[in-house]
Length: 341
Image (cartoon, rainbow, N blue to C red; front, top):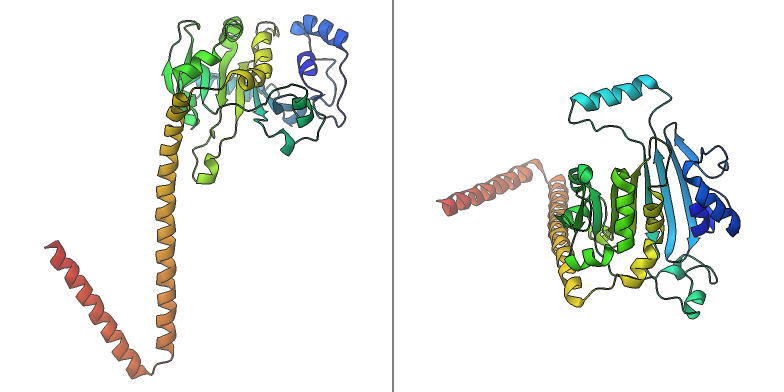
């Protein structure tokens, strides 16, 4: 919380932004690695279930807002908790339960005026004072714990667009999933590499993405939405000091993206080629569905017209109409058979 207070003007489910006391935050930050959480404000967390909590932060340059989720063990039911761990030992389909913090940061990407009034971090007024644009090029990049790699590729559409390659500057228990070597070189700064090394196996993934998590089914769903995802295992000993640098790097990553994530035209063309190929597939499916809908509508109109004609005929007229209809059907079938022959 001290770190969030230092980065955002509103943390938790409060209605009035707080002005943090800088001296208190600095002192708390130095001593917060082993905090018990007993002094946590009531409006900081919201209980979604007995084992899941969430919070929220907003009011920061380049970042619209961040959603946080804490997933804990089911301590309220020791039998279920034990059963989940035992099942993971004997069945590959069950993953070992872990306590984790998941965060998703939604970047402004130049759309501040659509969300916030002038005079707040990231607004047009601040840009006039010399603060640069929050826009950056779209791409998918991830640093992933190798234990989570297969699951992410199976579960996330955006990750499926990347290629996987180990990086010599990273520990051997993580790998890079990226769309371009230039993107990888831009993202892997010295500070980020050091933060990942310090966090150790608490890291599950750090993902920068502009593509949807779920495979798009319509062209509208392919519209880029830029986000940053972080998943960290919660240390069982309650000491968060090793993960603080990576958590802080995650919070400040929108600043680095706005400043540095602007690539050469050929890199952007390569990335866009993949997206355009996916969009063409969706357009083809959409066109085929639209054609099928038109065909069904045409058949429906023809059937309604046929039924209307039959209804106005006498019994003898109906018999002759149906005989002619059957004869036309028979001739069509014969033509099809002759073509096949």
